Length: 439
Image 1 (cartoon, rainbow, N blue to C red):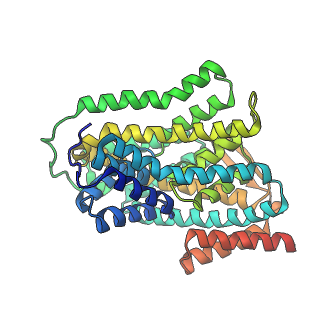
Image 2: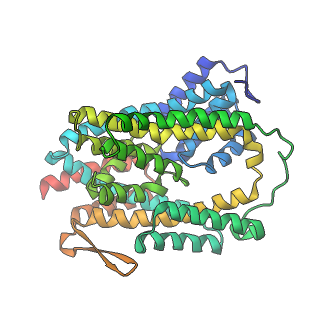
Image 3: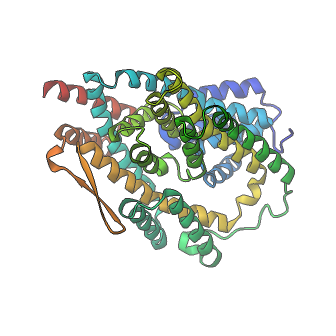
């Protein structure tokens, strides 16, 4: 399919080589991944103009899912149409997905070993520091107005104290942002639209074809599972849950980790609380989008309820299914809506919804931080309800002083010395080994 703005001087083989390189080097979360793509595609090769790159990045922020992977898909689409988009998006994900799968398999068979538990004690502590750092960084960028700060507080209270559904938080914040942008865009620090792009063509046909095709691709494994295993099987639960998650993952992976962790642990019983932090630690140390932690969850959920398959085969199917339903929607969003990028970039109400959701995400990450802190630092955490309020009560006697020490070290390395995530994780993992074996 022809795409406006395609660069015929960029061969498809060159595109594949560059995105394979990006896929293997995309450490550091979305900020590092976007910076890497900017250097490779804008600064060094000049395949994409600076203005187009930033415009596309803003567009990707409007969509659910990992914005860096969607930016890679958009870039490939811009250069070589559908096959370029597939190449860019898949090569961004596949290296990290393979590594996470291998680590998940190792974790499933070795998690009970003493030295593995000791390693992950340190990793969990480092993850706590990483999440705190993400909270402060995102809050500093996103909460520049009083309304945004109020939305963040409301989201935290709604999740941590009132146990409201995560999709309701996202939808409510988005609707508030759309309404406010219509009358007082300054409350969300929005700039008025300049009207550019109003005369661009409306590519309805391309959009509908993309939705139909990728909707079918997204649904195909779920139809197969329903026909062969039924809707009571764990694979159906995995596919349905992560399909829902793919629709509401505005604001990046950290925005949905708390919801995913609480559902995987408390709702479905797939994982123990500490295992969710283990999975996040694995995802932090591998290339690709952080949302690949979902693959770890899908693997363990199927591995532990494998019938009629063997545990390892079930785990592999669960991991593949999770990755499929997590990333197939990303291609749907890009291929369906990329042709509308000029119009969407000037939609003030849509920007208002996004700004409000981004503000609420700060509260969501605050909920994640508190939830992780309780389950990393304490061996036993109770839960009690007082009417609509849901309160967590840690057993003070179960406090793990080793995790506390390592968390302080991780915070010192991250905030005082600015150490990278992989270095911080490595030091804390080694510290977990030392403390566990010595005491």
